[in-house]
Image 1 (cartoon, rainbow, N blue to C red):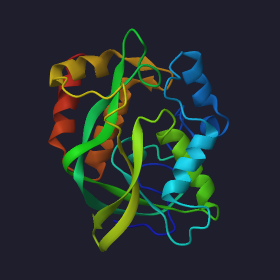
Image 2 (cartoon, rainbow, N blue to C red):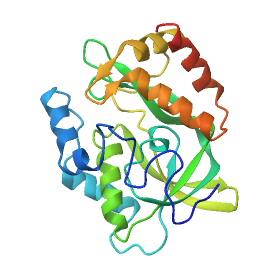
Image 3 (cartoon, rainbow, N blue to C red):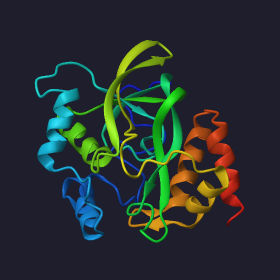
Image 4 (tube, rainbow, N blue to C red):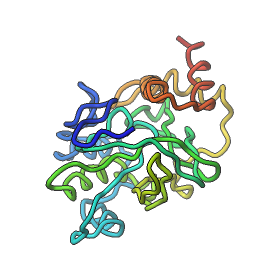
Length: 236
């Protein structure tokens, strides 16, 4: 599926789900970062200078050419950035997994939640999103504020096998050295955490539900997400 010159089928061109707390304004104005600091979870928070250096390590300021980003979780339904085209396809060497514990955005210190990361092994079907702006670096800097704020992910350029051939795409894979990385929680433990946790970005269960619905809308089969979704429903 591609849609040159149009928005994502799952989110508005201006960047996300209506009413979503994590949006262009809250990222650009450091609202999200400030909330993390206020909750005392700034151990791994990256400075603006660090974020800029990280983005430049992947896409330098003088880069010329199209820029594509791989969406496999919340970027499917709340991309934040401007999008001009999208393609379905797969990356190899990583799979989507609820492997990042959160005590702020989708949880609290006393009731942590879980969000997705790309963990090692397997493959992952998702969408390549083309950055569609006359200021693509500004869009990427917003994306870095969203994805790299607390260094829980590592930015990579990976090969994306799409419907019309191969692309190089930016993605954010799990930093397995991060203190919030989860290695071995079973499904029921994860379901209980997701069902009960809430943070400043909203209930953790909404994060899973939106991802499940986005994958269904794209006819992407992910048994892991579907099974976890069914497990969470038992706690309704």
